Length: 314
Image (tube, rainbow, N blue to C red; front, top):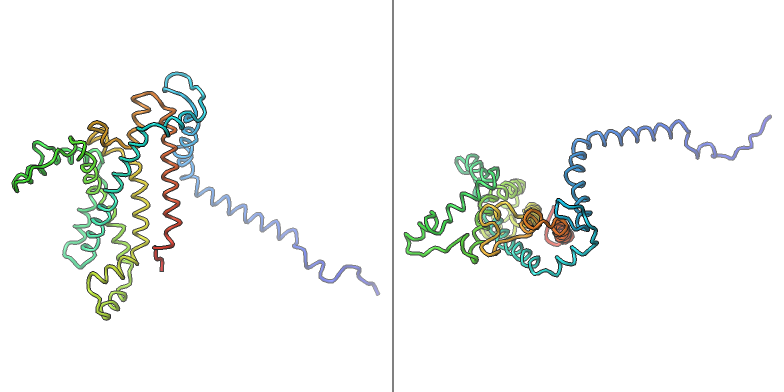
């Protein structure tokens, strides 16, 4: 009779080498499969987003006019920008634009979404019409609104004159230049906001409205107590995207006012453009672009952290 000296259960506690090899090989195949699917988007993302960001970070530490060799200056560009009143002014103009644009585009988009969510005849056609400006070139839209808001012979001031109202100077007036850009921007983006909110409205369970009606809630009470709370995820998405795009506003400003008159509508991206191509200060322009990135990132993170207080995902 032969006795075994092995401890009971010792052989069962270890994983057979073949099984371990198969698990590792399976994980390796899964990783390669994921990478293969990510490559078509990862390559352009690296080349056209991450690569330029890293390059801009390096250039922001240099003094460079795009022609002469770079000269390392450290954080002098950042220090100069943060103490420059022009930087403060362009950020204030950008915040002014966002403060006027965001409520206007959200309220207008919500009104369109509510109207086109009803059982209207031809509502599919109307949705397409309202979405058409979204896919139209910004330069075309800006030039059309520049013509509409022409203070001397534009349609808007001509219409106001019929009612005895003396129209403002719009984009030629320092006071009205930014409101002109806000109106044009909101008009173009209404269709995008409408589509997002319309999708949110159609995801709301109709039983919620029926229960509110039984409780005696009118249209306004159903809007405030049912629609807006259940629409909060779509609202959150609209706010985040609109704020990010708002801080990067440029095309309409460049086409309608060029930052004028007298710098009254100059925004951050306009200043980045001017520093690079007008003043030959690519280092300062790159530093300003990174300051703008940090501001957008900070505001977005604040929104994401604060969404738990008002966004309802149930």
